[in-house]
Length: 79
Image (cartoon, rainbow, N blue to C red):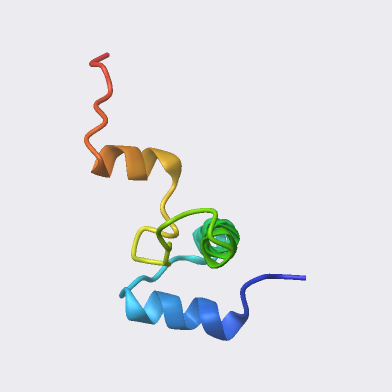
């Protein structure tokens, strides 16, 4: 059972102005679903007082690890 409904995925893409071809859409949806699970798990810890801050879904929630690292300044060595 998917954690993300078709309507939720459509709303996410519309909110952040994202559009993908079919194959990439499946990959991005999977990344988004994993991010959502992580956010929900973390926020359960917040609700029980285990952590002091909440997480939320944002425009980076369907980025790959490499894309996120590049946004944060990771440099790749020249070839």
